[in-house]
Image (cartoon, rainbow over all chains, first blue to last red; front, side, top):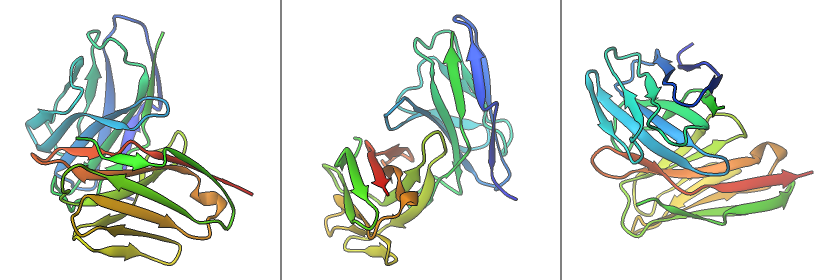
Length: 114
Length: 109
């Protein structure tokens, strides 16, 4: 079955540590996205990538970094510079970044900073 | 700019109808609707591309006004499974995708 996988489902981190969230898709999609969702809030765009080896900052990129070395993979690193990283992180992909492309979401990673 | 949704929250009894609105201060290229269950990923419902378009089926449908600044999602004869948070989404230009503020819907038996 085609889809998007994120791991781990739950992640705990101590303050001051970097942590990397995994996102893999086998849908052959060109575009991939990372969103952050806080309790009771909407989705905010962290980074997006239209194609391999290229990515762009979203609205809340500070304290985060990404890479896109393979079409299937778009890992997100939450660095110690992110002041309030506890949140639900969602990865998504789409066939393109045009207005008619729906987004497919992974199951999410819930990050908690202790 | 993030689309604004209204109402922020709504509680229904099974069988009742609901309307969720998504508004923007400028014309949108398109509008997408998603539903998210608590702790889960959003699931795509439908997309509207043209002003004046209406889409969906008898139970869940949506419209996009002529000026492409407002979309409404219609939930008819609601079921318990309709509970969740509904988001509208749109491509904001320069290939950035943004979501609306969200509407929490709770259907009671």
